[in-house]
Length: 238
Image 1 (cartoon, rainbow, N blue to C red):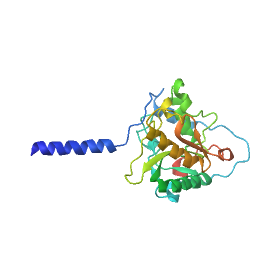
Image 2 (cartoon, rainbow, N blue to C red):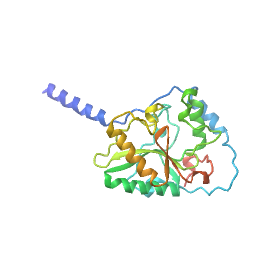
Image 3 (tube, one colour):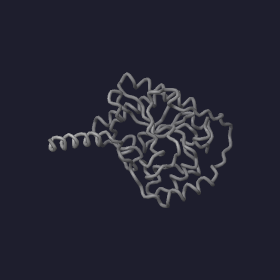
Image 4 (cartoon, rainbow, N blue to C red):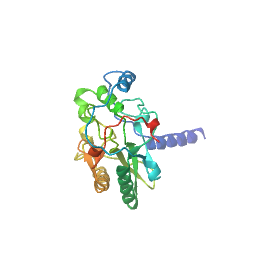
């Protein structure tokens, strides 16, 4: 009986491991993240000139309850290994948010939903990422001197999940992986992984997004130039 029970527990544990959230790619930050956070919170975003649209950040899950959130930067399961957000939320400028919902609607008949890893990102977080990342990996992070499209509320990091199982699909690389496997046109991985990447890309580009060449999960909305760099913390968004 003990042997049977031990076998049963082993099977349950194995299944749980299969469905557990995959660990994120990690770097060794150049300096302690808490030190970088303190500096970033004291810094100021770059000054911009121009006639920008007024910000209209919308929380994605209020527009489409089938959208799932896996906001890695609100957890320690991210490339820095420590939380940088205090809340697991995802916002975009309204036109971009509505475009994501249209993509979600188009994917549903194919059996897939959208899972969001990041969307609007306050500028100070972009500075943390840049200051923490070694020079040879900075191609994967935005320079705070120019700001990020995430800072404008017009970029979203996302993937697909299977509507039947609720599980995130497997892509050619993990989220935030700083290797060539993350490239949008990487030819490796399995045929199924590349096909799923194409399904996501087609749904997003059809709605006015452009994929980042070095990150298959990162999509920029076409109107990003019309919005300013923002440094509003999630707690202040109503």
